[in-house]
Amino acid sequence: MNHSQWMRVLVLQAALVLSMTLVFAQTPRPEFPQPQWERKDWVSLNGPWQFRFDTEDVGIREGWFREAQSWPQSITVPFAWETKLSGIGVTEFRERAWYQRRFQIPAAWMSQRVLLRFGAVDYRAQVWVNGALAGGHEGGQVPFALDVTALLRQGENVVTVRVEDPPQDRAIPRGKQYWEPKSRGIFYTRTSGIWQPVWLESVGQSYLSSGRFAFDHEGQARFDLRIGEPSGALEAEAVLLWDGKPVARTRANAVADKAMLALAVENPRVWSLANPNLYDVEFTLYRDGQPIDRVKSYVGFRTVEVRNGEFLLNGRKLYLKFVLDQGYWPESTVTPPSDAAMIRDIELSKQMGFNGARKHQKVEDPRFLYWADKMGFLVSGEMANTFPVRYDERSMRLFTREWMEAVERDINHPSLVMWVPLNESWGVPNVGDARQRDYIRSLYYLTKSLDDSRPVIGNDGWEQVETTDLMGLHDYARDGALLTRKYRGLGNQPGSPVPSNGRPALAPQTAYNGSPYFLTEFGGIATILDGQQTADNAWGYAGVEKSQESALARLRSLYEALRELPQFIGICYTQITDVEQEINGLYTEDRKPKFPPEEVKKLNDLLQ
Image 1 (cartoon, one colour):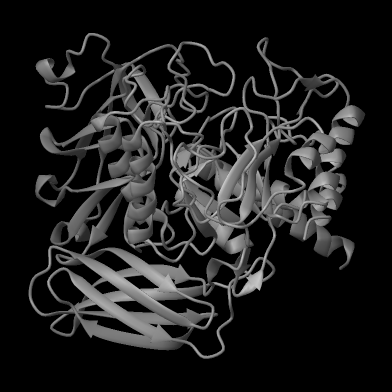
Image 2 (spheres, helix red, strand yellow; image 1 turned 180 degrees about the vertical axis):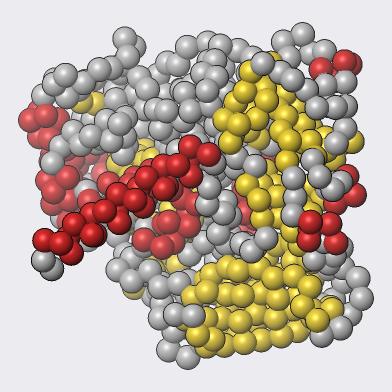
């Protein structure tokens, strides 16, 4: 390529960057929010909304939802009001707030059904359209949709959202959100209000509302489709495409609100870490032979299982090299600021030799899972737990309902290879209580009943019961010698003793079930780079290393010990980046490496 050609390429690249910058300035997070259930006709409602705190809780009484308001403050959706990117940046306790936005819909939509979708609102939401109540939702980690067809009018429409996020309600599954004013220890800035994208979709009068996929590495696929507002004689069709060309097709009659489709592909291109092959799928709903609704999706043919003491991907042994990922960004906390930010985090993990991530104490943005699917990166499906630890009927009800919605949302992703409902007995503070042990068991069986295609860890870290497919252990030993002494004689036979780490590995009146050991948290080596700015209350597991050399020496000793502990089928290093005052990251909060990535990769390459 000559100089003039290079200059044209650079000019085109600069123009692309400028155009994306302008798009972001107008509409943050402009991509379709849910790539596994994508429609052609949609409108993003991200961007500026009018905003007002409701400290005295007078908004409903004064009818703030009845008509368009002229509030002086605005907020940028989809960023929580505690974040810089929201334009608000208020981190002290605020329990209630209101959002409002004007919008128009295309004229052609007036003959269709229209859904208003929210990626996630923390924690409760009530929604009005043109002054009429459209509905509401409780649960801060998962999406919801409202049919607003009957409330819309031609021309300008107004959507109003009231949110409540009680910062000290101990029954709410909050994960790492701190219930005190200032972040401390392992707890971070709260997330309140709308924190994932908001959008409108045009659908058919009867429409494809959701789908569950089952698939394997031999090319078998099943699609269980749900239909909203079914009426008349309906049929559903699935067309599987590779490189834009159909390779399989199936069609079936709908029964009530369901349509069940199955197809097979000979010699499929399987999904793997090295070759994350994805087939496009186009679903069409027909009434009397005429198409009335369409959805685009994709599928990756792969199988995961735990068998004979090994973790298998597509029937082959795989050593899990995970990294703990809190999913926090300094400018936007739990909301990924852009697609590029999500791609970069996966790339940074892979550069250091990790093949997956524990998305810890949150239900991650669907587009992160999309990019994990595209890039060949494994993910564990986890949930924000109740903390401070609380167990009662209300906390169980809130958690269980939201966990089921999280599984429903993410079940189709090939990159997601396990479910982890509970972490370190959060939500079950007294496993000496038989009811709490039964609750752990019930979450295991509930998850398996929703999805029997993936392993489930019942209570990760310690105090496991016998219902778990992997024995997840947490151990922050300072060096490899300590790790070796503790686990050298670890037995894999049912009933074998399992070492404790401050808390017993097994709950009372339970025994080890023989499942493979997975070191799901270790390391946590806190390091401060020269010139790195840290919080006054910066901390790390087992102290803070003052030099890169001493930190890297500790890291090497841990990995060398793990190389001699074949009982573990995988590891998860804590953690990929610093988060606020927690400086255990391999990268700083602004994603600067603390160690040469190639050196960490060499250590991960030791583990097979």
